[in-house]
Image 1: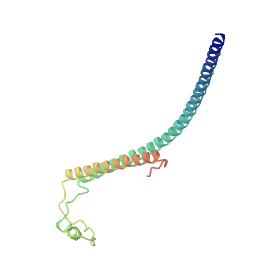
Image 2: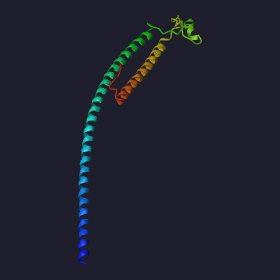
Image 3: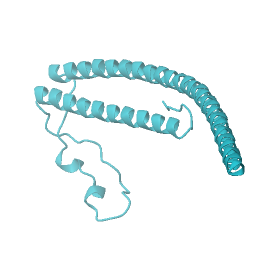
Image 4: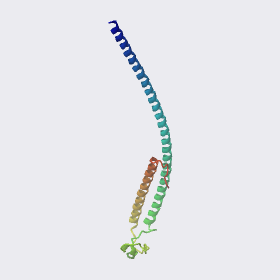
Amino acid sequence: MKALEWLMLQLAGAALLVLSAWLWHADKVGDAYKAGQAAAVAAGNAQHAADLAAARKTETGLRLLLATKDELSHNKEILYAENLSAAQRRVVSGADRLRCPGVGSVSNAATAPAGPAAGGLAPDGPGAAIVPEVAGDILSLAADTGRVLRKYQRVVERYEACRALNNGAGLALED
């Protein structure tokens, strides 16, 4: 019986040794995993900080460029408004007149079937003058249409600039 007890004791010792070796190995692998994860997180944070700095630099450049464009557009809108006001004053006072096209002022090319217009537009003939107040309203409507088109063009420019940034083409807004 002594041999069987000795064998059982040795098997229990070997099992304890294998169990302790397995626990030690699991602890070391866990430590290595945690260290690798910490290194990966640190590298990711460093890359994130670098990407964020580059994105902020790009955003600052784009904002500066768009602010400059907005200021130029605002100045042009002020000039357009002043010119419109002056034109409306001249039309309402009668110094300038808007005329309806006369009977003979429509070009033959406009009534021709298809093909290139050889004659072009004929000059305005003596047509009936438009009532000055209505002429001022027509100028105002034309100015509103021009303003809408200019705003649309600015939206398209901004979209293209942002799209170019997302595609990595850089800052390129044309004047």
